[in-house]
Image (cartoon, rainbow, N blue to C red; front, side, top):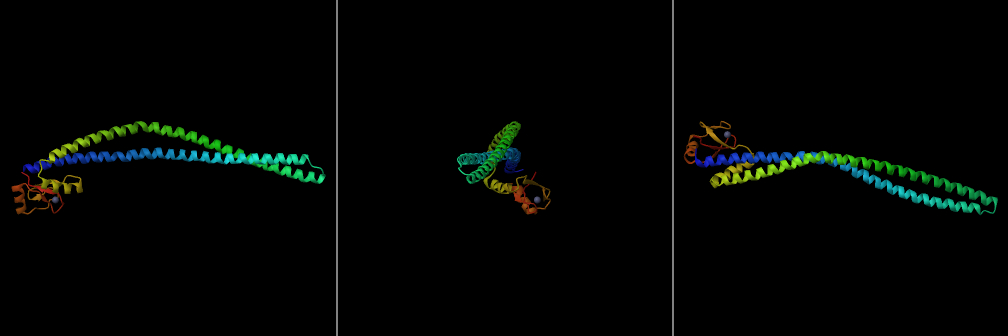
Length: 234
Ligand SMILES: [Zn+2]
């Protein structure tokens, strides 16, 4: 085997290792995404519940203002009723007083309803805070593991790439260029030896003349059948 081809095969071994590491690194992403999704679901529920508390508190404050307004109306009606001077005035005043008291009762009932909803929503927020804390503590170890795994793969990947680049220096530039072009497309084994007169990947026969040139110069030939790069074996 031509020494250039030997060097290229060594580079290919390193490239396959780099691909394997890159695939392992990529496989961490869906695992992290699953954790984010689980966390995001509870976080979203909590955010909505908190917004719900704020909305109900706002309604409650407005209801209390209405209660105060109606109480003032009741007081005024009460005073008007106490200062009447004729039976006709008394009838009108008592009607007015009863009406304002009904309004006051209604607004008090409404305020109590909003208070009830505020309490209910606050309970929900508290429950969801507990649930979120549980998710976070449950995920803590998994996230740490993922991070450790990621750091280890990144370190290994950097070392593998450095090794590959060092080896690539022994391969002639033109051969490496052709190899890289095919390699990035396939991300797999792409350099095959001839088996007898044929491609050892797909069995397409290679013309005698080309085979003779490959054996003499160590040049690579692209297989017309499957697109891999072929070299003359021993
Ligand atoms: Zn082939």
